[in-house]
Length: 165
Image (tube, rainbow, N blue to C red; front, side, top):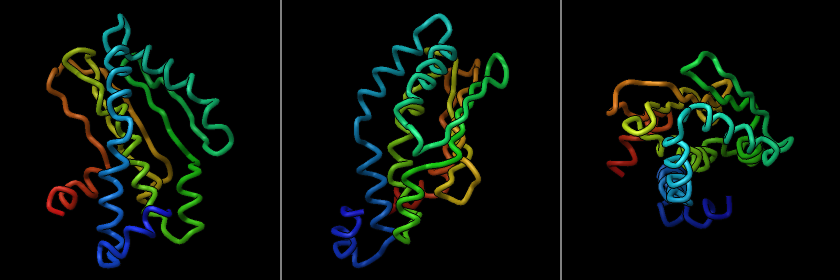
């Protein structure tokens, strides 16, 4: 919130451009450690199981500030669903729920690090509470396509703006 308030005048009081800039900057934070960790999990005998276990082990870190459900929908699909988010609550109380997307950009790091050519998995984020959905859905799915792309609702909403901005 403080970074947004300091940067807003630099971007001519354009809240959307300021938010896009923060998505870009925050999205790159700690990217490499996540890439290394997820790459290692992707090389395991059962990479989907390894990723699921890693996600579940992080649950205590979130405490009561988040409500996250984990579901193994079938042998090839794992979904993590956030139904309450501290950051969305905070930014909403301060009148700027869209600013939550700066943290959403950071959240994508672990999913972008999944390499279908190595792990046989692809990731997608199909919904975001920061964009008005009822939950944030992070899904990892088995694939036989080594070139399968990561898909993200945040990119669908802001991708072109980030590239042209």
